[in-house]
Length: 610
Image 1: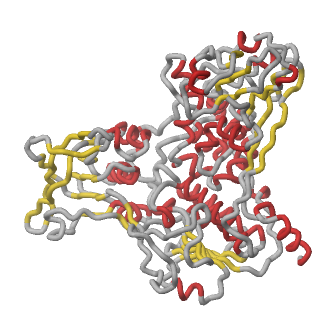
Image 2: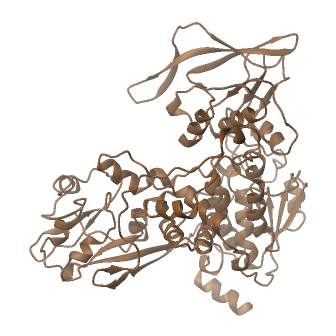
Image 3: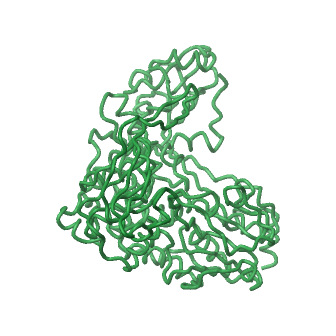
């Protein structure tokens, strides 16, 4: 193998598995260390730069970082039940325990004379506004609802996300001089462009829930509701109770929110019925666990067949029982088992089987092209539509995903808008800035806590069931207290503190290999990757994680380190008699809108004009 190119920004970034997996590339180990030190304001701001909504996401994030967490892999390798660090819930700790961050929000530059409109006040639009307003852009956000937040406010129940948290974190953005036009839905893109905006960002989400066209649906509409519309009605207080017997159709997070809300509004017999298997449901694992914890059954492999009604009143649904079969290519099909159809009596059905994009307000002759699924055709990586001054992001761009993805796309779209309005090619994406800084404080001392905790993951306390289920607005999860947050933060392996090897000072004593608690370091003859991975002290089986391979040493051997299960404990650096190993903190700053995202010559030209 060739020596590893550690100067490439992606190499050490990928070693920080949680940050690599986060769509917004939040520096997770950094803010967890700050929480462990009780520096909650600092931890909040580290989050805020990347994910914009720490309090919201600390309660509702889909947590792509946690399945990637190295802690889970290390525990699994040691035969224990794999439990990643509670990254999401620690994010909430920073939001809950901070003392005040408003004075730390960015200063607002002088007006630059350019106007940007954001359609929709959801997470992607608010991210664009947050990135552009401090740069002097005149940003106006339009939304049909009276308050900002988009689906964060309308579709996530208050027992998961209190309204006060939404108000606070949307307020930080609107207080930057952003003009919020609430209660003013945009009904014509042509009309909006005619108002003289230099760029328009479309972040209106995927506002239309899919219906279910099966026998009986067209004959009856009473007590059959589209899930996202029903959740919005609950959120805004238009729906305050529900009939006892409720069926929720669908296996995503919206379905989980629907059934848990129905349980709190008077549903005594609430069931979730899904056509897929339980493991294949799109809902996050913890959402399914929370649903079952509240006594709501989930019936899988049931395909809706008919709605039954009597004199215009819904009475039941029938389902065909199916099973999954897979062909040689692993493709799944659902085939009937031959069992009798299942009849489930019900008073109400909530349909949560997916969402669709809808842009009736975009005139077809404006030059914005859409694909066969109704999604805009965007230049890859730029979020720019076929009408150059119009950009898309969040669910409106590539269909429904989650809040953190919408935030990440908002950051990228803001970069594109900033470059576009400075006459630069939006396809040229500036690379992130990276840095490595030694944490050495003494021969055996580091500026981070390198002790590896043996604690299992700590559970987040819940409100008592009789309290939580009695009201739609009582928050279920109570969050970590400071002491528990410290212990959970101590489980983090500090994956951003990298083991950096200097071959010129290595004397090949193998002391680092001997002391490594997980046998991740080997000195061996070089070879092809497949061969080399199998000859290490512990075979490197995770092919998605690159090996750290040195140039040839004095004996002709190479040092090979398997980054996959490294504990970042620093024992190799402490044991090395020549200092060939060092523990260096890796920092990656993604490029955001502003002078650093623009071409150097254009930036100088802008400064000269100013």
